[in-house]
Length: 204
Image 1 (cartoon, rainbow, N blue to C red):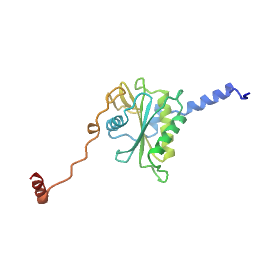
Image 2: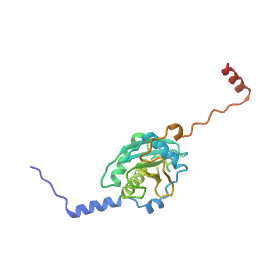
Image 3: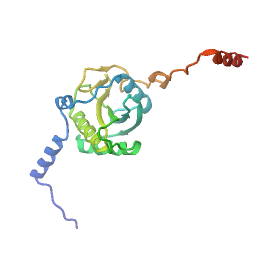
Image 4: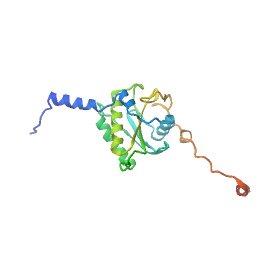
């Protein structure tokens, strides 16, 4: 025989009310002072090429101060209804797995950004608000700056809280090869008599 208690209506209301507070409205996100990406398309294209996200896939990435990618991870989330606390825990688990924390620093140096591929259009949803809350809280607990939240839909990509976006990549497009997704490293500097001698020797 199993004994238990059915949740009361008051308890259910309390739970739903708590979940409702674990999301950020677009105005709250815009007022949080989230740092702007210098080249969001490059970041989006690079993550899309690496992880090839499909709808319901989240890609969390950590960038250094020069916006070079230091670590990234992707995972599928089909949480319904959306809950920022659950999203926070999922993001924190991935961050702990791929990169050490920066909690000993007085001010965060590295920045975490989140790309979420989903169905629908680019307009803000409550699910987006829950992901924003989760990203901000996970960054605080891991010692990172909270960076951009980007949605990827069939219409393209959109940095929420900003007016920047594009049609490609999108949720249905094929990933670009790494050669075009990222600029190649600059060639080594050469010059002088020694370089001329080496080039002539190599040509023989």
